[in-house]
Image (cartoon, rainbow, N blue to C red; front, side, top):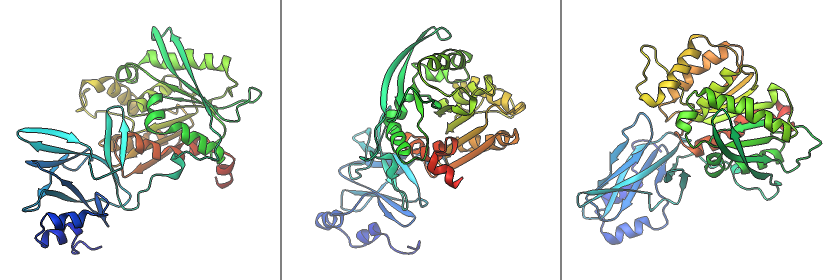
Length: 382
């Protein structure tokens, strides 16, 4: 479709619609309406105003829908590149008040720790089939654990994933996941592991999903957290589980501040973790001064990233990064890649037309996990 072609909403508007015409026009349609690179967001109902709220960096975060005269139909047309996936809400203004709601016309939802958002699936985007349960894939097992950390002075909880073919007579690589419960609940990571292992795209692996009650402090370059993982948790796991005892078989991963925790822990223990999976890492830094525009919450992150940028060294062997181009953090992640690459580590960055959210991180798991830990099938093509 060319830019000059009329969109469906414009054809409706030109017909001077009444209620019956609007009813007929809406019947059987999917919303938002995706027509090539243009998307029409629609709301129908009484309101004093309607606003689109989204988190696409670089666009106005709130854009007003316009009302078609003599109807209760509101719409907004945006240009959205192919392959995009955008989470959003609608803000409804009535009688001096406003309320953010999920789009009642759109069945696609994405959940996160704060609730749910509606999801625009741009032309060409499809939910990866390997993120859905496969009845042929034998499911692994999740076992809860609790561990008292002397370094943190508190108990930490989480889950251990054991693959379906787990045998105590075999040795397995280990992956430690920050914000583990969120990866399980919002990024379908257990299903992804089951499917990729079943398809031989990654090997059987033991995965430890860890949680923190104070992630913004403990994940922000906290020496105690690094000590907890490396000097307490890993040695304890090695006593209890059949793990391969070599750096290439240890991976740290996380998203956002979890990415910072992974990289800063590996930096404090260079050579101990041979694999890093960093998703939308909050790698704030400064070129002048000590405080980043993101605020005091990032001060310790800035301190760490500035120190690494000043003297970049090889701390692992393979580092996979992913980031959405609709995130403000794309700048920091792109900036980090040449520094990591320059140390001699193998580095791969994958970008996607998505934002800072759990389904973006879910959709990148296959490429990241199979690149860090290629299974028998993937090794044929490497």
